[in-house]
Length: 355
Image 1: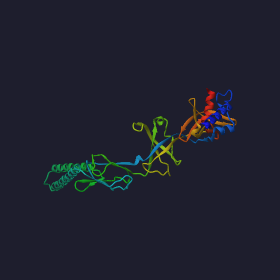
Image 2: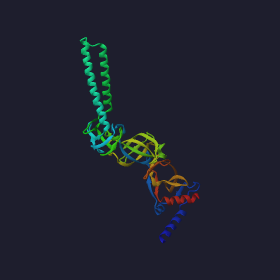
Image 3: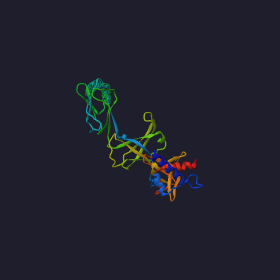
Image 4: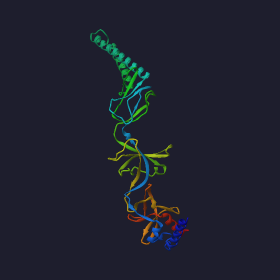
């Protein structure tokens, strides 16, 4: 209790000994070095800002969407085996799934029947050609045989088109799904025993090693961020913004943007970390200061700039902010010394004179 009373007494004396300069409306506070030391005031230096940091935002590494391929089940059925795991690298033609399917069996039976009918029609056409050549049959009978052959061939082609090239016949009424391209498996949607509908997605395959980041953008920034801005990684590397999704996700209550991963940046798919959204605006009037240097007095963001005999109270415009630093556009210049500790005391002195 005695220590608290003593501290309050010293602070009161300092308030009386640190008047606001006359006629400057609480814009200048006179303090000696000894008074600064007693109040625990420490200083930091404003640095020139090449990029104005708008915000720090959460990011997740995703595969480059331009190279994604969805492998679907062409027929309804039940999954008998799975030869694919997330993160696994596969080559074109590798087996991914074996699926039991009545629809596939029926379609396969229809194909075989169509092929059989085509061979019959082809043989009939060849026989009519010989008969016409020998003068035994009329030309019209050959024309009819040619028409039947063409119809039969069209039926074969229709059945073959319904079966994708990456599907092959499997054992005991099943079909095999193979990789249509080489790449890395991003996601597997089904397991052994699952029933799958026709055209349902079995897995997602990334045909490229390229990665992007998906950055969540809060509502307050969604209209401010542009594709000209940069994504700064923890290592200091910068990525380009490829697209901005301004539709708000009802779950996260945020929009999103997609950005590139800079060359040399070591990341893996699914990794989570924080990035900075920054704007390239080199200017002498743009500086970076510790976040603790900025205080709000009477609804205005301000800093205490060191002068020869104390501090000037300077209004500032915060262009961007992170937990550690804020980017200012104001009369603060690179090299200016700003108070970063003891601000409660400085603020109290300023408010006393304002009131």
